[in-house]
Length: 296
Image 1 (cartoon, rainbow, N blue to C red):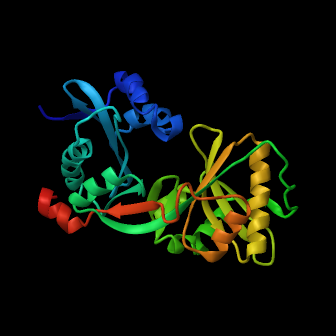
Image 2: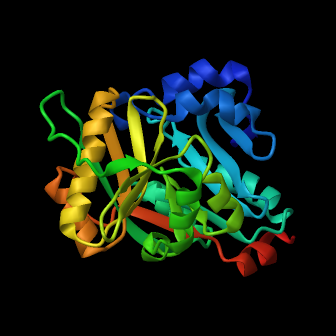
């Protein structure tokens, strides 16, 4: 008997939700994205079956027309056979190759050893290690925001995105939750739309941040942060946390580069790693290997 990989259908919603119920202490984001992923005609959301039983899944997302992103790889923790990740990649990579991509990447948590080993056997190479930092926002008191803290308009968003050094610090990636976008004009334009929120702390050297509401809506992902000093960074971050608490947000998460100022700012305001530093790993598949193995 072997694995069968097929597109996910709407009838898979309940079995898939049950499959991931024990992951991430019951907070896996995948059930909340199920409907959107099924409707994604550009990419493909796949179910992995064994003897008619749904035992895993994975998703191909096109970040741009030429940048492939693999995500949502899950497996049933009660399933005893190995090979779910291998079956997904064997199914998906030939489809990716036919589109002549410019990048093929995914990100994973450092402790996901099975996913890492499987990807490395297929030739994926680690490109970058970054740092996930998070904080629960309790109902207690947070210092009132700085009076210079305010929203940015669309023109200011564009100005910041065109001059920020944050992307280069992160290895020329735009980090958006657990996705790592290439730094391209079309991505920068998306970041200025109404679903992305920017805040400025007006000082001689302004400090900036950007964030997006996540699923569930009580979570927020900080996607950009830039400051000229620890003091301005802490004032900006503290003002942001005050705003989020007032909005009913319970949890904030971000991914940071190895920048001493940023790491000091976030640690001082109560952001910590889950288990260790360098816990967010980005992997890429060399295009020469993709072409050699699957054509294009």
